[in-house]
Image: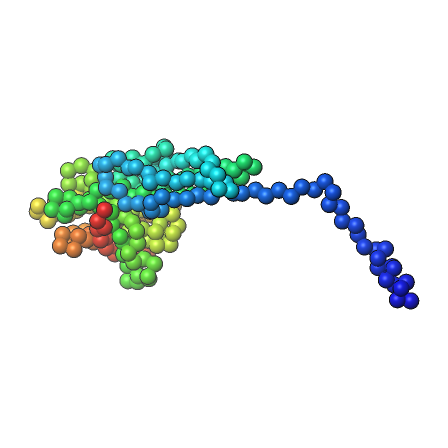
Length: 240
């Protein structure tokens, strides 16, 4: 009886056909960085990319790159060392089977002001919103202060990067358009033009109190958003 049952199971087994099937392995592009993935670069000097190589199974393959300016909207194939901005470099490569891969580098271009003649610079930002500031909103990197002309400066985010950097929502949630006058010789500071709301959230934003501390190399300002939020921003200059 056991012999009969065994025979029944044997007759029900499926025969797996492997003839004609070829095993194929594809190797996705691998990227090797030279230098840092985040670079701070002094405005006014040419930027030299430290370099990235792409390989497929140990052999180098063709690499292409594209550069985009975060604040200016610049698009090209190289970082412009003469224009203050946050530049994203995207390196791309495609393997022999048509599979692509990318790698990125971020380059901040800014001029370090001496707080005697200029408040230009790259800054970390700490933001208190409606009296509260969690850890993610402290020492955020980075806000760019760039010179427009004379004593007039633009600040890359009128709420200090609260949504863009702190919550990592990105550039679309930045408060753009704030310009200020900072005459360090007379310690006279004022708002020249207000930001145009808070990115895609919209609304109206008004920056009021604005002050500079040359000793600590900090900038402090307050912005009131009609959505019901009050931002107190402290920017601390970073040496490049």
